[in-house]
Image (cartoon, rainbow, N blue to C red; front, side, top):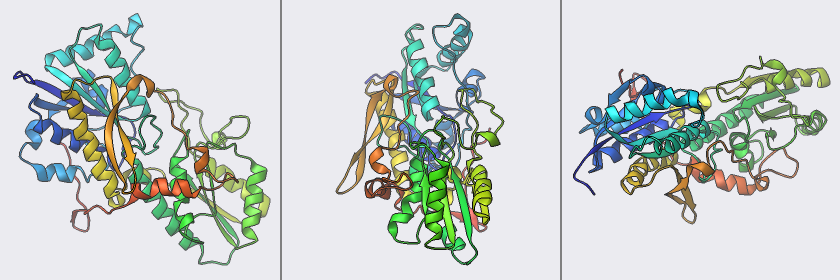
Length: 414
């Protein structure tokens, strides 16, 4: 350990979650306790802020203010702001200006430690900067810190943010089921859940179904299974033989056998900077199909943003683990680790997690699918194994601070 101190920077990227600020709070606590770090900077809007030198001094803002750090850990969305910026390939000559700007920024601010809180696309940024740092002889350490409600990051048992999103989705679906059960009118209610390529969040929608009859949706559909309209109709018909009101949950990324998204006809076809199609609309398409097939009442809606920002239903397990992964990221840098993602290792009986680094090159731009063993034989629900996987992640209620009847949030001013 050297007497010479350096600075560090942290950014948030991609879609926000209820727990991404808890991870930021963990990084802040770790940096304030680190003998190596003089100043922890926060980049507004991730890599976009670094390219435009828009930063704040988090060490100054939070030193001696643990109460504010605690409130930050209970605040949903990204307090530093987010971005969806895809860095160009490091070997392309035309990309030189971008990387020169970034490494000039790092040098100007005496930054040695780089923390990036994000999901799959954000880990692409960590991987590229780690690779490019060798060319600039930059004595820096780059750490990816996981975040995504989709739970599709490889290498880690689960991701910060998933537990809280799963808790909200499971709770909301159980309430929707109760609401729909009050009438005798024949009806189908379809609820669309986020999840482009993996069905982890849709599995959370199915979670209350294993708690007992009538607790959760009747059928749930995942991107990991080919969606068949004929089988879907057969499921609905079988459901109507038992009761008049059917509730269906489905992932936005469900596809037909030809690979076409079910909701594609309802979309513009536009792509984001990472080449992903903007999704949603599958439930609306199926609503119309149900109405034509069964001549019954049909309605659909998308849980949309609340599934990732409902801080009032945050999982305490998720918050505590998110604080842990943030502080452990700082310790990784102190030990000399770089070019890695800090990952959860699960332990059971009793449940707890530990953290360990994994090579970022084995993680970036890859997707962790819902395992076959987590989906039932019919492809329209989950197994007991999946239920047990989710259960500890959604446990515990956060002690929310309220003011004037609504949750109090922390704001980092710009």
